[in-house]
Length: 490
View 1 (cartoon, rainbow, N blue to C red):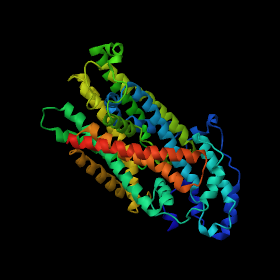
View 2 (cartoon, rainbow, N blue to C red):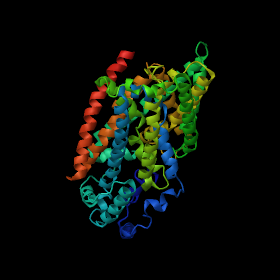
View 3 (cartoon, helix red, strand yellow):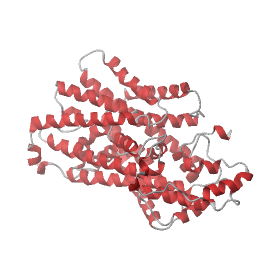
View 4 (cartoon, helix red, strand yellow):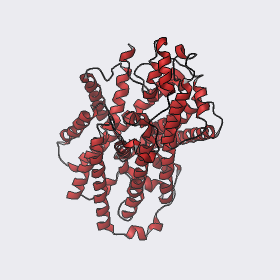
């Protein structure tokens, strides 16, 4: 029944639920009434929290997703990319992520706002839809004067409903490319989720192997963090996990602080005085591809932008949270990549994760324990939306019994844990996942969906075409190169 259908797009639920024409005039008056909650960003409206995460909490979740296990491969990426290329490239990927997220949010303006039944009787709904689109872009920082054209284009889009249980990203894909587009997106998203979870588990196994090296009980120790991941992954939504983001970020900062201290104690500042010995650019296309995969893997927030948005008390403020989260991540990435690499310039060549540069000592033990904790509280940020997608496809919604959610997410985590035992290397797997899965869902599909849903021919059109072509070329080239490296490591 309609009352039991899972909410798809919050701002459009009213349009989808119109079933009685007699109530149409009342709903039209509600929709056409001037918005009363649109205030400037500096007014503080985004800080109000009722039943979801605040701007600050969402920013922490975005930063935490960026500053997870992928940070351990940043010195490796800096070595592959070179000092200058890495510094500039990190900023370019930040901007690319932001505009790709903007593409997805603009897609909401193009979606049909009403069913065929009410199409001819409430045309003035377009005005309210335009106001909603303008508010969304205002807070996201991507205002332009073509939203009226977009709403007009949306009226020509299919008004039938996508399958029940479809995520917001899936709704966009369905309206853009039909059922085939939804199937492709679902396959890519599941592959992305599973790849991320496997990478997290591989990292945990690597840290544990470094702690209990030479003992015969390592299998038992690996079970404990995996159980914690399962328990946290059973949370209803990621706003609950914001409580762990602060602790995880502090643990990550402390871990890199210890690594920096070890580098200073062992090598001093000799690396900075000999900085001209560092390569400034990638030595080959394969090296540039490895750099791209690691960095994109770390910054991969675009596929989760709707999940973060839907978890907020003020969804229109998602742009503010995205800016804050990506800016913090960029500052940390500069230190964790170029900074750490220069500190260990004469002592270590980074062919794997950064913890390999630490000697066997009590401090190394502390760092590995901290990183196990960080990865353990990061993995649920991926497992939760993955579980929600699978539950939606199986017709299991939030009002169902909790044991169904627990079973599905537990099986998901267990499967990824078992697959992680057969993955050859941490750096190689995250490079390939970043180049193929994250790049496809974060850089290729968003501009493609925008172009399919809109008939704009102005600045946004040119930007979307440029982003699409750039995404296709980089994804194809880097995926081939990193996949070849992954096969060589087996």
